[in-house]
Image (cartoon, rainbow, N blue to C red; front, side, top):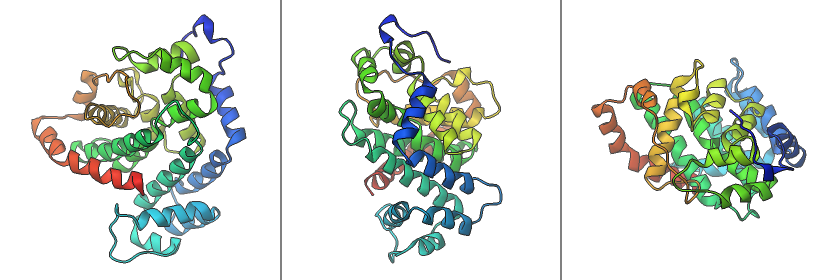
Length: 292
């Protein structure tokens, strides 16, 4: 997917060079990778996941805090990870762990000035929630997996801003609301934010459908692999959120999904009617999780 860089992009790091730099400066990549390597084992149990998370007391505390937030609206607060595990099912807990890891990762980004971290985070969780809803209504893709893809599909923007800011600022300076930003990214960087986010998902041992959905969420028509449904769900959910004003960046083009995405999801008038009825409430609830 990468393209030739512009002549003025001399000094820009390749995708792998940049990712190696990120890994050197953030131990969250390696630590989270160990947790999710356990969490996504086919024989992983709730106790296995708890043991993996408890190695990082800060992460465990973040998970407990979010479970006690307005998003879950529990009648009684939980006080530790063991209690938390009894409240949530395995898949919900695994995704909450991903949310907490991604939030900590973005906390490193607070000093960055090129993008609005809060908008990015709200958009990410909005797309995650919309993807889960769309997968459930269309009976396409795995709802838990597309939720996970939504959580970090745009985290590449934050990574570029934090670790490759000079070149990312060049990208942002050339943004045009009539042209897809990912094309400008490829011209200047040789790759785009989706490819960088997918590389992070690989390092975190997330399932292949999650990785591929992230990598191709702007260009689903180019994906020829076996996980088309997940790619289509994320692409359409991302579009619906962006068109509704829940964008990760301002002043960028919002490209409609290709016909293959709608056709692949089998979205008829009844399915869309159900989706639009539930969509506003799902977005509002996702805001509670973003603020937790």
